[in-house]
Amino acid sequence: MTTQQYKLFLRLIGGAAALTIGGVSIYFAQAGFNITVPHMTWVGWALALTVPAIEMVWNHERDRSSMLFFAGLAAYAFGVVTNVVGLLAAQGYSQLPWDEPWLFIVPFVIGIFLEFVPEPLLMVILVKDGIEIEDMLSRPVMRARPARMPQASVPPDGREPVRPVVPSAQPPVYYPRRG
Image (cartoon, rainbow, N blue to C red):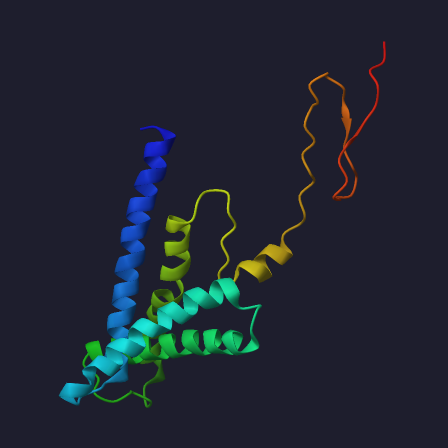
């Protein structure tokens, strides 16, 4: 298997996983709304489909609008809560089991997974290699990483570049060849 075939394989299985996880999340979110009036079930599906759209836009554009920032946070919280309620409904609970709070642990962990994984996974699949992908945790994690030293390239005439000690926007300085 070549590198290109392997990357295509990863994109295919990653895309299938993103769509599957996203579909399960949308289903449980719709179930979490618990709309029982027959002619109004479309509202639950519409809201369940809107939440991931808001999350995907928020992952890319959250610095541009404070309203979008809060809408994205609310969408993630709303998605996790409706996933938890939908998972509990799938387990047969008609009411939330507040008297047994440990029953929320597994649905909460699964609800977080269902809500946070599909969007970044789908973006990794859809976006070209080498382009940075942002998700909810990318900025805090990226800020915590140390800055990389710039890689100086060897010029065509073979002179040795002097690497800057501190990363900067300045190009490397070249000295004439000795000897």
